[in-house]
Length: 162
Image (tube, rainbow, N blue to C red; front, side, top):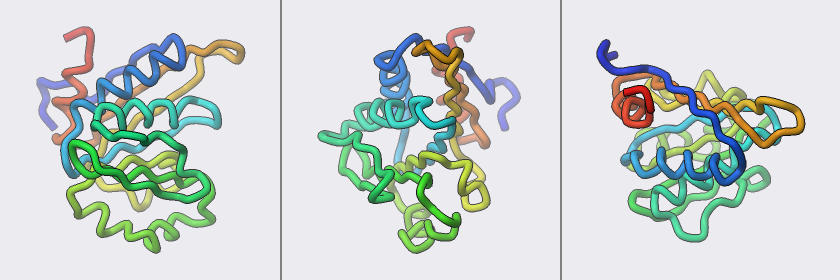
């Protein structure tokens, strides 16, 4: 990891539209082969953030939650596969969806509920944790963490303190 670049940045989203806008800013910075691991409690805004990512990746007509179909793949600026691990009984079920091929291919991979498949996540990824700040409030704390060199520059470009 590069010592001069931040590994983590936290951004406060004030509402649903801001969560989508933050996802859009991240999506514009993603490149082929990037992996985005989304996690947070039910209703935290993972799908809203993913909608922003897809818009930033220039995907048209995307943004539906893949909860019931497990995976949607799109063409955008680069290929994109959006998966949801919420309904999986075991992380290994991702292997049946061509997981290893996805990770070695050119697509940006977005995985919601990534905490249900931690053993299968690539070592270099962008982790995005969404956490509501109050029970009856639309604000979310969005923490982005780079687990390797690949995403550190992306984190640095989003850090308002730099």
